Length: 93
Image (cartoon, rainbow, N blue to C red):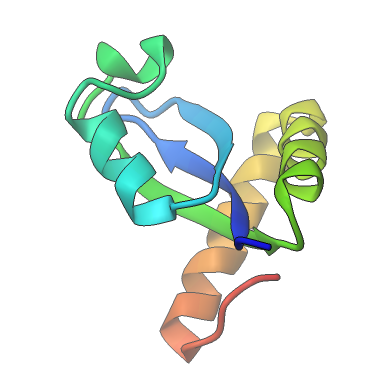
């Protein structure tokens, strides 16, 4: 099984976009090239603010839905925790 990710992008206008992918680096590049989601095309550049490794695509899709149900404040807390993990050299998941 391929590794999958749920992720949050911070858009240039400060909004957050949540998605899932099996290739995180490629997907972020696609968003920044205007080939990602319609939402992010007009809000470039985007930066990866949160990532969470998932067991498979179904788990990633489920986690994406769960994240989308969170309030903006809760999403920002996830992003802050991710920043701290990156500082400490660990990966969520």
